[in-house]
Length: 149
Image (cartoon, rainbow, N blue to C red; front, side, top):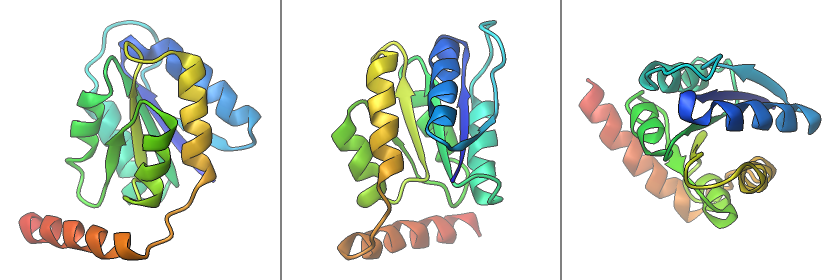
């Protein structure tokens, strides 16, 4: 599985540590920025990871900023993408199992790196199984398709 990762300056250090951790787990990682702790706007980074999902360059994405909120909002503007803000392992599991979220977002000012690693472990260890959730995801995607026309 290939994982795309991105952050703004608020979460640069978290991203750096998560990249190393994910690579140690045997996953291929693609870095979408930012590339230093210098201040940067997050939307283009979120759009990069989201477009990586749509273009099938990556299988899943992880975005980090101060709260995780802005990254989730931005990534969800890319048609076909479902990004979920998570700050605990249960939410990370449900993001994938119930919502087939291709991207998770986290806030470096909300959680620490150790918790973020546990969240990443949980998120990458589960796969969407469909069932009743598939019907709901289809409804969401149908609404999106209607508005993209």
